[in-house]
Image (cartoon, rainbow, N blue to C red):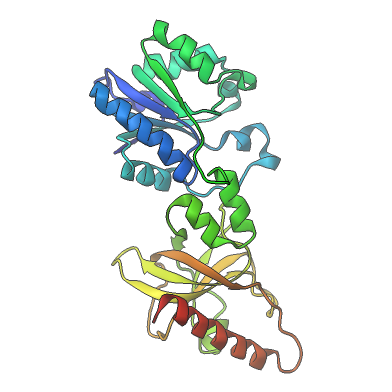
Amino acid sequence: MTIWRSFDDVPPRLQASAVTIGNFDGVHRGHRAVIARARAAADRLAVPLVAVTFDPHPMAVLRPEHAPSMLTGVEERAVLLAAVGVDHVLALPFSLAMAQWSPQEFVDRVLVEALHARAVVVGANFRFGSKAAGDVAFLREAGPASGFEADGVELDGGPQVWSSTYIRTCLAAGDVAGAAEALGRPVTVQGAVVRGDQRGRELGYPTANVPTDSLTAAPADGVYAGRLRRLDTGETFPAAISVGTNPTFEGVQGRRVESYVLDRTDLDLYGVEVEVEFVERLRGMVAFAGADALDALKTQMADDVERTRGLVGG
């Protein structure tokens, strides 16, 4: 699988392709229904399947104050797309100039000139071009003259249509189980472990700390049962996970994901890339106060660990 980040990266040897287009943030079950249809078209036509996505998210350019936090970055998105049958990813740098392209200009520049599309498969609600004037009907009308067939796939899901917005709503409520159902896989956060303030170690529960920010969709503040996986060795450990700013102590800067690997105080994970998997929310974040705050916190942490053990083992 190859990531092309501009038209210039598309190799001249690409003479034909099947194309699917979207933000594909999270590559959730709804996306995979579209990709499966596109994969079938690519196989029928004996051409590679190219997924066209955008970086950054168009809303980050058009209305940055309303830009959503992202479930996946481009690289992770590409890995997930490859796992469900995409051969190449064209991650177009979205800009105000691109936003002004008419639907026909988008078709000409992306589908015809760059990718030589013979089939285009998108979600039924897909819109594109200036003022979102392009849709599936436009693609179907433009297709014959441009050498491609177009297909719009109805949105998938049960009572709730699978969407990136729905998944973000679940995460904002701490509903990692609901988000995982829509994703078709567990909710995870990846990053390099950084040195924290050592509060957990002082309390007997050393944690691996991964910073997060407003641009990354992480579960709501609270405590979760889950797992921590080292990306260098593949080792996986049961973990009690805290998300937030640790309100019991002052001076904590920034939101972070803190994972206590059950019964392990010997792990040196500083600088190691890890993946934190969320299984179930245990409780919201609590600020302990008063003379017995530390004792109350230790008691609560011990309970969190035992509940985690019951859910994920260890």
